[in-house]
Length: 458
Ligand code: AMP
Image (cartoon, rainbow, N blue to C red):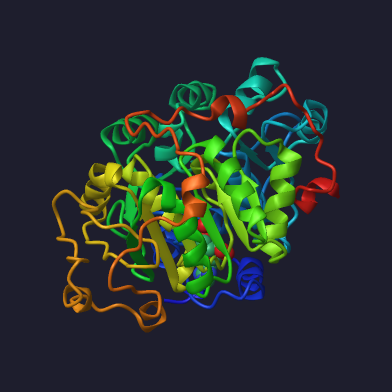
């Protein structure tokens, strides 16, 4: 299958070729023809599959005829996080460089004035997070009754973040006759219900079985004592041939703590979580994408959908308490067919989360032994752990060459440095609270400056 078989215009084909893409990804090959036919679409695809281009490319062609009126956008894309919204905007920039169209980004943490100015000019493509969009709607600054194409992206994430009531409210302002493209990495029953409500006779396209991790990502578990996590992380960072990596923590305060600890140990590291202002988030992301910062400690919400083309490693400093989050985290590496590596640090308290992850992804995650890893089972059911006490058992499982030097016959007790690190008050039962208050913070307008996509600076 070639891009030229999909029915896209010559201008788009040129932009795609300039972007260096040779062949459409499966989701693009399946979705683009339907979008061009103005069909509703239910897309089940993870980030990293080329999903964004599967709607941006045909939308640019569909929107190339006609003009937008002031405050009446012709299309609307709803994204769960600011970063994801900004990335979609950037993709429109790249693929739409041979087309004339206007675009506005309505995200929290940015001044209303600048957003109002953009809306007043009339926009063809409006990309928004739900909270900020509703604020504009409530103030009468944007009218949604001329929207011809609606995209709801990362619907399952919106559900996790408690945005669904906002999304339903937004959709109630849209005309009934429209084209709706609905994407989700997983299809829990609530998402199915919504898709039935929002879509008319949709074409369903799915790439990868729901909630699978990319085959190109080599995944491992490392068993650790809770106090040995940072030490083991440092070992992995030094032993694993890491070019750049995301290090995920479950809570914001752990993001800060791990960031500080890594910095103290001389790593080139940044941190990203939902409480940071937009300016700092964009700055850190830009540095990471440019390779100036090689390690990024982050929370789930902040890192959701980050489009960083080549992340060599993902480390789960904490095992996510929701199996879907594991899939999303791991999806930050091994994107678009590249090789990636994902390693999770697992304490004895994490067994049930690990079991849930293995069940969801439908495959086992082999254990890796490194200096400082701990004895004891990491999973309560699926795979038996190698008997680390027995040197013979250590040779049971094939371990990649790169890791063999890290492998130990027997686990060592924690080093004194670990013991001096504060014990983490871990509550596995604690539910992750939605970060909406932070990610949709309206009280701290920071202005866009030159830290946002270039189209806003034109
Ligand atoms: P997405 O799933 O939309 O987040 O895209 C993941 C990555 O794949 C992005 O960095 C895209 O730039 C890249 N990408 C999208 N389409 C293609 C393609 N046809 N060939 C190669 N890379 C692509």
